[in-house]
Every structure is written in structure tokens, then in C-alpha cells.
Length: 256
Image (cartoon, rainbow, N blue to C red; front, side, top):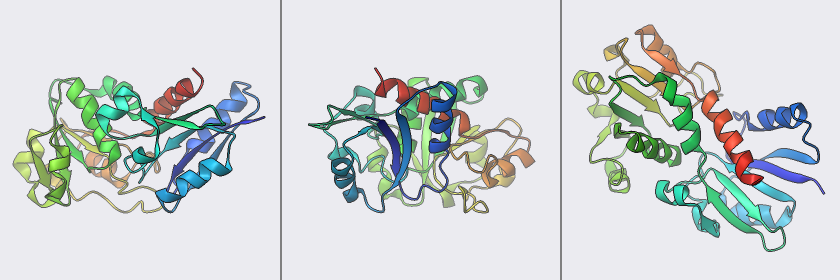
């Protein structure tokens, strides 16, 4: 019987995950495996998906379910519990369907940003407060980079207290703040295909060549967020390397 893997989230039209794993299976001659997309309009559809598909051995989780999936799982590994977000599920024993949550975003982000960090990147602004943002904050805290969140609504501040003592709104961002944070990371879906003209509402005019802009979005390869940074001479990185790294980590977890 084939081993089935896949991705849950909504929408999924932007995702390269199926393409990546299908190519991996072909290149590495991995037989009897397939990778499918499962767009769920509501997380409450998840238990039925699992019940109707006993061959599913593992799933990736993307926007907007990295946090809301947690109550539907049986257990979390240590990192996923510490982060408070899950993007990888391993299904043990198809009959009893024990669901364990992991966070491979942590591994993917840590490895992908390493080559780009310099001495001036001692403080980071994290745009967004969703599940992906928490993995980013976890890594930055681990490597000694102070991080501050930027949110549309400060009601999120209490939820983020374990990562930072300060949360900005987009309206509060000014020249002083932008100059004080040389690392800016977009964890929101703003600018993601098909809405490629959208851009996070930061004051781009204050960016400098010493800035590093990292966008978790990888489709398109250069978002408007990164393009605006490049116009100011900033270094830019998209999320494609992180996608590949976290996918390989998920594959390792599913098959260990």
C-alpha cells in the first residue's frame, strides 16, 4: 500500500510542496509514495480527512492552521510545544492514528538564515504574529538576537510575551525604529501569489544597505517587500531555501 503524505492549509494555490516532494520521489527513486494537497476551508474538517484517508503517514501544515491544529493532535514534540505552533504531523499506527506534532520551520529558518547574519543584525523586527512568527522568534531567541513583533492589533501582545517585551503596530514604525532594527522578517502571507502587488506597511524609505530583509514567502521569488528593500540597497532573502530545508526535516521525521 502506498504511503501518502500531504499538505493541509487554505488556500494552497501558492504552495510548491507537492512539486518539491514529487520531484524528490522521482529523483531518489522513492517508490510507493505520493504527496497530495488537502485544502481545508476550516480546521474542523481535519478529523474527517484523517478518518477517510488511513494511508496518510505524514502531513505538513501551513497558513492558517499552524496553531489551531494543536488541539486536534495527540501529542507534541518538545520544540513544537515550546514554539506553540506545528507545521509537521507524523501519524503513527494507521489503525489507532496517533498524531504527533512537530515544528520543522525552526530547523529550516535556523539553517537558511545562518549565512546572512552579520554583526549589525543583533535586533530583529518580525512582521506578523501567526504560527510561523513564533518559530522565527524561537530561533532568534536561541541564537541571541533580540526580536520585536509588528502587528496590526496590539491585543496580540500578551500572547507574545514569552518572546519579547515589546510589540509595535505598523503605524508606530518610524525612522528611528527602522534604523534600530537591521533585520526585518516578513512572516505574513502579504505579497504571496496571487496577491503579488501587496506589501507589508512598513516605511521603506528609511531602509539602508545595512538592512537584511527576509521574506518567508517564496512565491513569487521576489516579493514586493524584497523588491522595495533591494531598491534601498538592502540584502534580501526569500523563503525557498527554508521551504526545502523544512521539507527535508519533515521527511526525516516521517521516516525515522
